[in-house]
Image: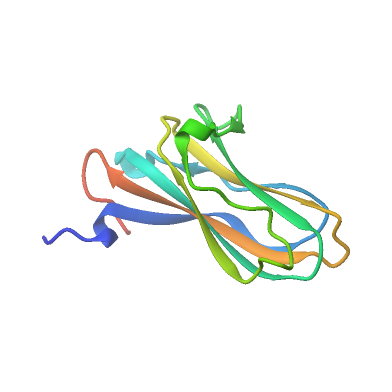
Length: 136
């Protein structure tokens, strides 16, 4: 089989596309070892829709056990996701992850919003250690 991105990567939802207003939302956990393929890296892909007001700060958290979470350290990240406002909405942002933790999730903190903004995120797992990723 000819190698392709389809066989080397798989996107998993972490933040459902929704209107965000003030507060913190923790995304759904993404297991980098799903199907025992042990992905070696990942990309957080944030799709910002229309933001009318507020600041929406997205970050990536990591965990060894899917219960104790911490911000992914700068040494494990490639690029950055800016604080999303009405000045930089309607954009797709990417944040690479090359750390060693098994579990990842996105977190969005929204402040100073009256009507807020729409955004969502997926984590794309990539470069499996054991075999091509199953898309079943």
